[in-house]
Image 1 (cartoon, one colour):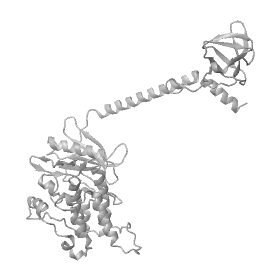
Image 2: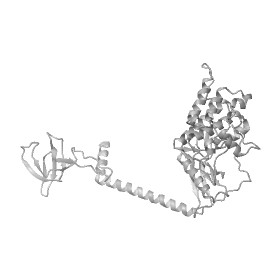
Image 3: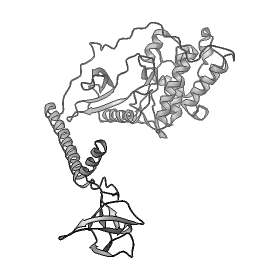
Length: 430
């Protein structure tokens, strides 16, 4: 239903995959809805074994939908199997673990892929697995969705409950993954879609025909006996008899493989032999239609609007910084953000907090009262505190007064930014 092109992001200069619906599907409302849902599902996922979704574009006149996806510069599992044939057990286990991890991430979000097959398993340059194509993924616990009376999926790998229109869940993907692993180790799926066999017959086989055990399907490969139990448990007709999770399937496979290795073996399990030399091309055949690119509105006007918005944000931010700096310089604080405590020490100003405060000639209640100052009066501290009394000085209209005030009835005033800078300079340059 879709075409995929190799493109380049003009901002980041990275290669991307551009996916769009084929022309015959572009006006189909159901197809467009599935396309959007696939993009949103992929955007919701973040896993090293899942292709990343970068963006989704849709033309105003509904003439084109474009999904911008991570470009995977490697072959699909289908390509590798067609060119190389079946894998050895250790390689199959290595790729099973990665696909199971990707499916576990999807299932943990309550979603089911419903189209796990070799074509949807890609390899990056270092042959890391990337699961793609979430076009028919849906919530677990519901029946397979249909369009015009037909269910979606690939008949060769579809689970019995998908084929029967029953409720699907994570175990449906386990079945499909079991079919893929069956093909990885034998070279053929459990029920092959060959000439003379109709898709309906394949669906019936998934529902009611027991699969041939892998060791009997390919006796020439001398597969280990345990492989039959492990793989056939994944493709049980009854979901209740399958592995409940993809991780459980992968764990059982690896556990059986490791149990077969002698305890004194020095062969590293994780060191896979390289693939034989294979050349893959990403060229687009000339027969494919070239994408018709339409832009929403004037791109230059769009860039101008975007640039103006960022400039406006920058001016607003710089203006706020300048106001904050000016407030700190003049008041020693930034209203609503920074209000430093006022320290009381020699050379600093204090404010009277009592309704009326006596200024005495000495540091004691018995000392002569020189003056009385009201609340809010600012005084300058001239020395060290003595028995709870601060020496202060201040001026009224006629004279300069020096005396002592009770420490409990004054509070320190924060320094202005200017005063703070001056003190720091005096410390550095005495």
